Length: 242
Image 1 (cartoon, rainbow, N blue to C red):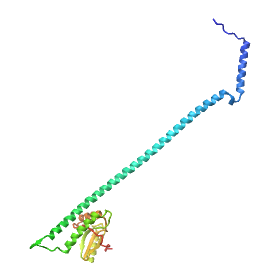
Image 2: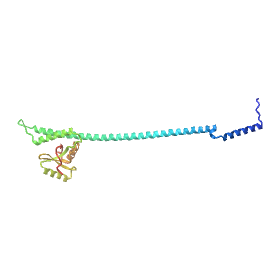
Image 3: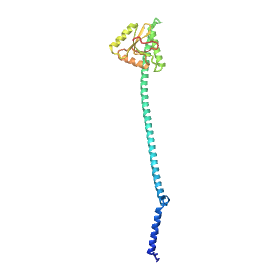
Image 4: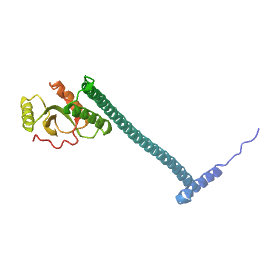
């Protein structure tokens, strides 16, 4: 068996004193020159650096999330705007389709009227064509001119009117227009234009597009004016019923 080292009480006391002296000396040294202090400082700085880095990462991640959120909001707004535009365009296309259908219907009516006029002019008496009246020729010309203008001019061209009556004198035309307004059944103003010598026409309002004029003609027919028609009024001058 190994023998345990033996220490005298004096030696043990001396070592304790030396240890205390060393510790006291170490405590009296400046903290900057103390290795233990440096270890503590480095550890603390490292811990704080880690915390700062984590906070910075969290802050950057939060900012990225906010930026992404704003981008998504902007994209959503853009999509909603596009949807609204598409709906608006769809409604415009529906209205354009209705206008085209109305124009086709009106053109069919005009062609039917023209066909009837042509048939009238082809009535034969003893193998000789009966001479058509000037009014028939003028009506045929009006039909063709109106259809041609409706097909060639843009929809925004305001040069058409809805004719509800034709009279021979200015006085009779104005009196008739006044009577229609006093009856209170027509919501449009009644205008008077001189179409030609001895021809004064009554129209629903001013010159408008073909589509609007067609719509007014339908309105007139629903209000007991079955012979209402659309006519080109580009060279008819100003309204005489003021």
